[in-house]
Length: 202
Image (cartoon, rainbow, N blue to C red; front, side, top):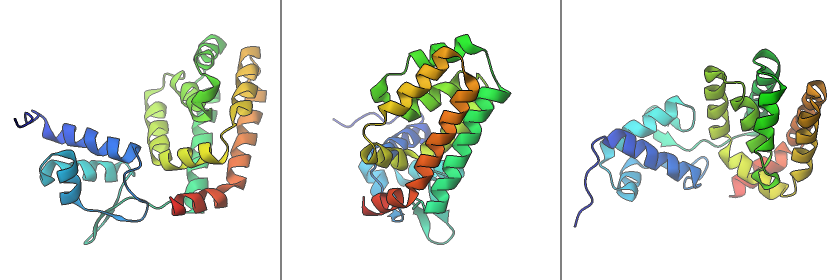
């Protein structure tokens, strides 16, 4: 018995392709063949092509005129640019869009140590309740997904950074939190060459 055709094949295909990217299905720098992906996710090529175009517009997929779609290969300078953007969004959430310590403490209290530093960063931005900031931060995080996975392998014991930041948040010391976030940013930038090698070898 054939599976029913979804009423909205574009959004269904978009969700399916997003799940493939999240699962690490695509190799950085290699082409994405529309017909192969369509067969894999069970849709015709048209909605899959439209989904890839959407993801290209979000910066998650590269579209090269005359050559098709490619999963982006992030260089060391690309990674630093993404890290800088994330740092700027965290500063904006804490300084430009503060909602008070109660909101920040509640967001931080829901993070477990094994969730990783990115989960805490997401919570900090989410508690700002600024829709544009949250969306911009999500896009950067989505582009960084392969990097975040590599970071977890590189530093599986990043719990100390989360503990330090959540302790500072509980104490209400925002300037110290900004300093801690800056230190973390500098540490990840210092290992960016190792990260790019890991991504290239994946």
